[in-house]
Length: 262
Ligand SMILES: [Zn+2]
Ligand SMILES: [Zn+2]
Image (cartoon, rainbow, N blue to C red; front, top):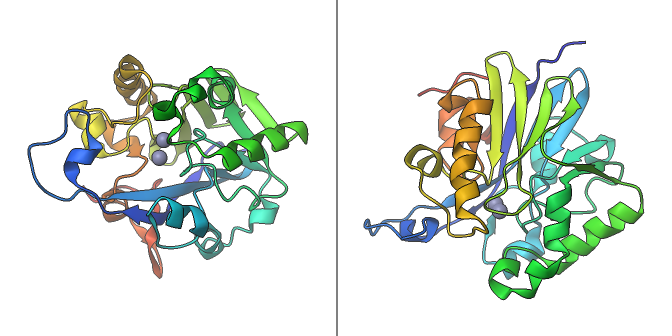
């Protein structure tokens, strides 16, 4: 069976913000640097895997974010029916990665041990650490656990041939990236191990962090896991939909297994 996959980045949202908001220590340039929100689909001989589940309209309103295309619409454009999905990989439990929790009724959710422990343990006594989590998202994941629908991973693990998860931590205690074998080599869906190309390339740090050292070590790990630096796909960079070829009729859905334009 082939271990080569296609990968699609599906943009579903946007948040306009100042550049200084994206870095610890701020930024001297008084310019805007918006972030985009994505989920990803991995398609191969072992089936279709969805990475992360985004947030819904109610959460967008609550957090003053914009939904540009609901995730179900983005998946539909790829002929992916959410109720046919049997495996969802959750990079971490922040609100923008694990909402829409009823959208995949037949899926098992792949999560790091550490992330569930973090989101349900003593660190959530601290308001600043709790901010990126949403109570209902976490309760929904606990319900899935009791329904036998969570698969736990501890560090690096294989999900399918050519598809592995790797715990990096840093930004969230049990944050994992996803490494995918494709026709152009090993692509790494960094998710929030690198929000923007600037974070990974300039070794700067996004303000939401529980361990600075793990963030920085994580950049080295991303580089080792990917065939080259351009095989690392940041989790929130609007450049992603500019660099990679879009599918016909959907400029916000791009193929990451294809060569980037620069
Ligand atoms: Zn996050
Ligand atoms: Zn995020």
